[in-house]
Image (cartoon, rainbow, N blue to C red; front, side):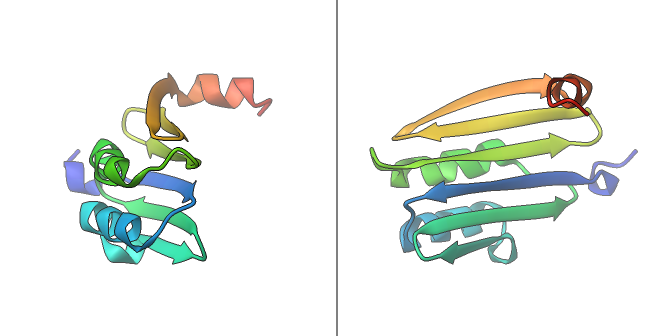
Length: 107
Protein backbone atom coordinates (compact mmCIF):
# COMPACT_ATOMS: atom_id res chain seq x y z
CA UNK A 1 0.00 0.00 0.00
CA UNK A 2 1.36 3.43 -0.90
CA UNK A 3 2.34 5.52 2.10
CA UNK A 4 0.07 8.39 1.00
CA UNK A 5 -2.98 6.09 1.21
CA UNK A 6 -2.46 5.25 4.86
CA UNK A 7 -4.64 7.10 7.33
CA UNK A 8 -2.86 8.42 10.37
CA UNK A 9 -4.21 10.41 13.25
CA UNK A 10 -2.37 12.84 15.48
CA UNK A 11 -4.27 14.44 18.33
CA UNK A 12 -3.09 16.39 21.31
CA UNK A 13 -2.96 19.52 23.38
CA UNK A 14 -0.25 21.48 25.14
CA UNK A 15 -0.61 24.33 27.60
CA UNK A 16 0.41 26.96 28.31
CA UNK A 17 1.30 27.71 24.70
CA UNK A 18 1.77 30.87 22.70
CA UNK A 19 2.12 32.12 19.16
CA UNK A 20 5.70 30.83 18.79
CA UNK A 21 4.63 27.27 19.63
CA UNK A 22 1.63 27.57 17.31
CA UNK A 23 3.88 28.70 14.42
CA UNK A 24 6.34 25.87 15.10
CA UNK A 25 3.56 23.26 15.13
CA UNK A 26 2.00 24.71 11.98
CA UNK A 27 5.36 24.61 10.19
CA UNK A 28 5.76 20.94 11.17
CA UNK A 29 2.33 19.58 10.15
CA UNK A 30 0.37 22.40 8.51
CA UNK A 31 -1.59 25.33 9.88
CA UNK A 32 -4.97 23.72 9.16
CA UNK A 33 -4.26 21.03 11.78
CA UNK A 34 -3.39 23.25 14.76
CA UNK A 35 -5.10 26.06 16.64
CA UNK A 36 -4.47 28.19 19.68
CA UNK A 37 -7.41 28.72 22.02
CA UNK A 38 -6.27 31.10 24.72
CA UNK A 39 -3.06 29.44 25.92
CA UNK A 40 -4.10 25.93 24.81
CA UNK A 41 -2.52 24.51 21.66
CA UNK A 42 -4.86 21.98 20.04
CA UNK A 43 -3.66 19.47 17.46
CA UNK A 44 -6.08 17.43 15.35
CA UNK A 45 -4.66 15.75 12.24
CA UNK A 46 -6.18 12.99 10.12
CA UNK A 47 -4.74 12.07 6.75
CA UNK A 48 -1.78 10.44 5.07
CA UNK A 49 1.63 10.23 6.74
CA UNK A 50 2.33 12.72 9.53
CA UNK A 51 5.69 12.85 11.31
CA UNK A 52 4.67 13.24 14.96
CA UNK A 53 8.33 13.12 16.05
CA UNK A 54 8.99 16.15 13.85
CA UNK A 55 6.04 17.91 15.49
CA UNK A 56 7.33 17.09 18.99
CA UNK A 57 10.82 18.27 18.02
CA UNK A 58 9.39 21.50 16.56
CA UNK A 59 7.51 22.51 19.71
CA UNK A 60 10.23 21.36 22.17
CA UNK A 61 12.19 24.66 22.12
CA UNK A 62 8.99 26.51 23.08
CA UNK A 63 8.18 24.42 26.16
CA UNK A 64 8.44 26.05 29.58
CA UNK A 65 8.66 24.49 33.05
CA UNK A 66 4.88 25.03 33.40
CA UNK A 67 3.93 23.16 30.21
CA UNK A 68 1.95 19.96 30.20
CA UNK A 69 0.09 17.94 27.63
CA UNK A 70 0.38 15.08 25.21
CA UNK A 71 0.48 14.26 21.55
CA UNK A 72 -0.93 10.90 20.43
CA UNK A 73 0.05 9.47 17.06
CA UNK A 74 -2.11 6.60 15.81
CA UNK A 75 -0.47 4.73 12.94
CA UNK A 76 -3.26 2.69 11.34
CA UNK A 77 -0.84 0.76 9.11
CA UNK A 78 1.40 -0.37 11.96
CA UNK A 79 -1.61 -0.54 14.34
CA UNK A 80 0.35 1.38 17.01
CA UNK A 81 -0.19 4.31 19.32
CA UNK A 82 2.83 6.47 20.09
CA UNK A 83 2.37 8.97 22.88
CA UNK A 84 4.52 12.02 23.51
CA UNK A 85 3.87 13.00 27.13
CA UNK A 86 4.87 16.58 27.94
CA UNK A 87 5.82 17.57 31.47
CA UNK A 88 7.57 20.91 31.76
CA UNK A 89 10.36 21.03 29.20
CA UNK A 90 10.58 17.24 28.88
CA UNK A 91 8.92 15.06 26.25
CA UNK A 92 8.71 11.34 27.03
CA UNK A 93 7.90 9.02 24.12
CA UNK A 94 6.22 5.64 24.57
CA UNK A 95 4.56 3.24 22.15
CA UNK A 96 2.21 0.28 22.28
CA UNK A 97 0.13 -1.81 19.91
CA UNK A 98 -3.46 -0.63 19.56
CA UNK A 99 -4.79 -4.02 20.68
CA UNK A 100 -2.89 -3.58 23.95
CA UNK A 101 -4.14 0.01 24.34
CA UNK A 102 -7.75 -1.05 23.75
CA UNK A 103 -7.50 -3.98 26.15
CA UNK A 104 -5.97 -1.75 28.83
CA UNK A 105 -8.72 0.84 28.45
CA UNK A 106 -11.43 -1.80 28.85
CA UNK A 107 -12.67 -1.83 25.22
